[in-house]
Image 1: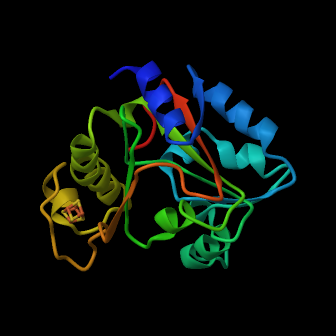
Image 2: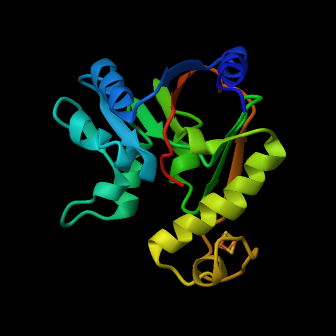
Length: 201
Ligand code: SF4
């Protein structure tokens, strides 16, 4: 994959794109441009790993379903994330041709990435970059979702037997919807933060 071609294709699809060699610099960039806002997170291990919540919360009102406090639960926080000014999440895969793929369980990530905010940021490590839409769907199903299932410790065949999708029908299945962003949504700003590090699943 060619990072410059990817950036050009994303721009042609209406996205702003910022590229960083180091996640620390990406975190600093976001921390500088998001100030005095309500911010919702899309349940992302990438965001958790770059410690963005800790930075932003000092000067914004930030909601992160992965940072529930005592007395809070995932759904309550995830609902608040849908009505914030800013929404930040990651992706399961990003293609060199500029498409984004995300698979979701509860729907909070994909819902928040589509509508209702001033601006949406997708924070993407280089490991999420693939050649084609077909590769992106494969990655979402057979790499990202099984790793997430294992992280959550749930009883799905991908979590128990290994890293591939078995298209299960278990009660714990986390793959309930898939969204393909063909290009930027209308009436909303969207920026891709590309980082030359392996981040998230
Ligand atoms: S459909 Fe089931 S087996 Fe496949 S990745 Fe999702 S949870 Fe795992």
